[in-house]
Length: 319
Image (cartoon, rainbow, N blue to C red):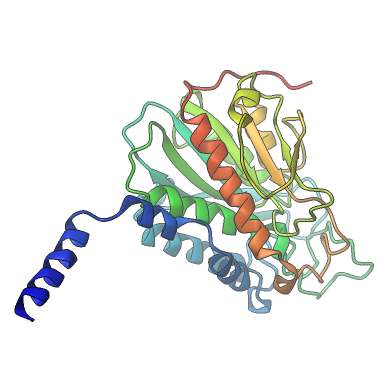
């Protein structure tokens, strides 16, 4: 009996000193339940639609900061995790044309010369007063933005959790950015690329996730930016996934990757497509396909890991 107890204690000590890497990686894989938790918080009615400059968006910012902190990511903004800026609204007509906003930025420093940027915007349309709503009478209606873009933020956080916790020193650093004021004209990403917290010439590529929560297998996941580097076809070779996807060459477009493409940085853009709830008060958390989103994020991990096998990607102007 004593021998058995000693052997058991030895096994526990061995597990502590020599953890199973495969088991560790398994626990880090994207999880539908974690995705649902993030989206349920960010797209709850109490967040009032996360309009730029609103209390709800400030709550969302604090939530993202807490997640970054829990993953051990040091802040990389100009004020700890935050990169404050004035959102001067020009895209849509609103009463208050200047609003306080902040990008939220965490850094995974692997001591590498180049960095991969992962981004998603965390703002939405608020209570229908800032324009862009497709509802005929949007004023006063909470636009929760579960797909647009709490789903993308959940993807950002899951990638941050994976790469910060996988006990591997990758050959590239990671900069995780939650952009503000995207709905007002890509203002957060434009501010970052105009005032970067690391040199733009040191960016390997930028991956943007905007609306990845409503996967339809008949359509598949759209991956834009395929034409922004001649190395993407090589990186995409041999991908294995239950997620159907198709590629598009364009590097510009109506989301934050366009700001990086304009600076001659290779980009990718994940998007599951439009739907009747787009920019409507009905874009609610219960409509998210969390299991499919976990598969999309896993596909993103494969692409990122393939890209890390290559030198810094050359930029190509997309046709």
